[in-house]
Amino acid sequence: MKKLLILLLIALLPCTLAAQVQLFQNSLQPATSDLLPILATLNSAGNALDNEIEKLRKVAYNRGATDAQKTDLAAFLLRKIRLCIDLPYEANEDMILEVADLVPGNFYMESLWGDLLYFKGDYEKALEHYETALYKSPEDMQTVSKVGLTSMQLMNYAKAIEHLDKSLAANPESFFLLFYLGKCHFELRQLDEAINYWEKALIATDDKNQKAAVSNSINQAREMLASTGDSTSDEDQRFIIHFAGESQQDLSDITFEVLEEIFYQVTDSLNYRPDVKINVIFFLTEDYYKVSRDWSAASAQGIKIMIPLKSGYKSPDYIRGLLAHEFTHTIVHLHTNNRCPLWLNEGLAQYQEFAAENGSPEEIRSDYQGMMQREFIDQENSIDLNQVPNLMNGSSRNDVARAYIASYLATRCIADFYGEQSFDTILSALGRGKTIDEAMVEGTGNNMKEFQREYKSWLRNL
Image (cartoon, rainbow, N blue to C red):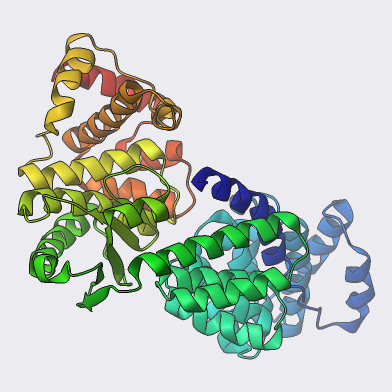
C-alpha cells in the first residue's frame, strides 16, 4: 500500500509542477510604448529576439541612459528567460543577473528569478526572491502562493499554512492549494485539519489519480488519528514528543535527555540546525505497523519520527542509537530538500547511530560485523553504490544487509579521507540542486566513479 501511495503521488507530481509554473503569468512591459507591439510578436527565443536585445543594449549601456531605457532592455531579457524557462538555471543565470543590475528589486524580475531557483531546487534562495517580490506587491496572490509552496518545500509548515490559507481565500476551489494545506497540517500532526482540507480537495478534482492519492492520504491520517487519539504530548524548544497510552511516565525523561544529546551530536557533525520543531511519535507496536505499512525499527518522514513501543526503551544506549539514526534522516532531508541519494542518507544515519549507541562511528552493529569482515574486507566484495536502492528494495535479506553495510562504509571512508566537514559540503551542494557527482566533487574533489575507486582501495586497508 505504501508503494501504491508513492506511485499515485508521482502521477500527481507533473500536474503539480505545471500548476506552479502557471502561478506567475504577468511580465515586465517596456517603458517605451513603441516597443510594446514588437515585444508582443516575439514568442520564440531566436535571432529576432536576440537582435532586439542587442539593439537595446547599445542604448541602455550608453552613458546617461535613462531608467526607461534600462527597463526596455530588462523587459526583452525577461521575455527571453521566460521562453527559455525549461533550460537549466545556469543557461539563464547571466541574463537574470543582468536584469537585476538594470532594474534592481523589480517585482517581475524577482518573481521570475524565484521561479528559476525553485525549479533548480534551491528553495532557500527562491524564497528570498519571492519574499522580495511579495514586499513589492503584498496582495499578489500568485506570489503569496509561491511563498507558501516554497515554505512547504523547506518544511516550514506553519509559514506555508499562513500563506496558502491567504491564497485559498482568493481561490477557494483550488485543488492544489487544498491538497498542500492538508499536507502541511498532516506534517504538523494536525490530523483533523488535514482530513478536512483533503476532503475538500476530493470535491475540487475529477482527476482519478488525484482522487486516489488524496483518498489514500485521508486514510493514512485517519489511521494515525485512531492510533494516537489517546496519546499525551510534551515539548521543548526543539522537539514535540507524542506518547501512546501510558508510556509518557516511562519514556518522557529519558527521551528528552537523549534527544538533547543526539541533537548536538548530529547537527554539529552535519553543520545544520533546523528552524522547525521535530515531531517524535511513540506508537503502540500494532498501531505503528498499520500507519507505517512497512517493517522497520522506526521511520522518519519529513519532520516526523515514528517509533513503535516495545521492550528495550529503558536502555539509554538503545534509544540513543535509534533516535540518532532517524533524526539524521530528518536533518539530511531538511539540509538537502530531500535530494540525498539513498546510499549517503543511510550511510550517514548509521554513522550517527553507531556513534550515539557505541561511542564511536567505527563500532558497527553486532549482527553486521561478520558480513562486513567476510565479504567487504576479506573477500573485497563491495557493491556499486548506485545499486543500493535496488538492493534495499529487494526481497533478499542478505542483499539488504550488504547495501546498508556498503552505505555505512562509504560514509566512513568520506569521513576518514576528508573529515566530517565534507558531509556539510556535500549535503549543502545537494540542497542547492547539484547532482551527486557535482556535490562529491565539491566535498571530495572526486566524482562518484573516482570516489568509488578510492573507496574500494580504502576497504583493502581496513
